[in-house]
Length: 101
Image (cartoon, rainbow, N blue to C red; front, side, top):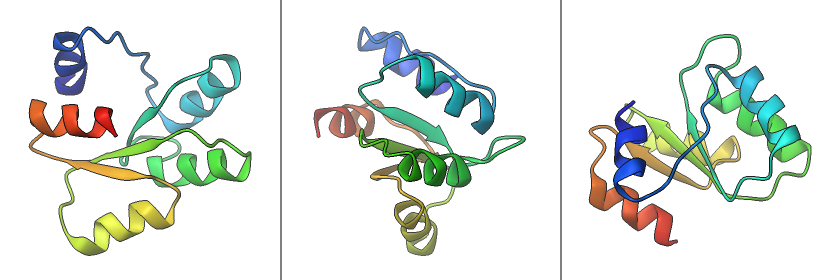
């Protein structure tokens, strides 16, 4: 919800999925410029969903949304196919920087 509000301030209207399974289904039906992937979701977490997307050839950026700020956590996100990490507390300036990449 925080990210939704921040994206709204930037004029971006995102789609949302409640879990990794829904996220995979959404990508099959819609072309996205990038994905913000919550690492902790029910049914299928963001790590597994990102791995599935990469295995299917998805090549757009996947940005991890996580509370984990350790280097190990960030490396795990990258190893699972995510391109970058946005850690809590989310800040508008950090979000802008990621979107500009």
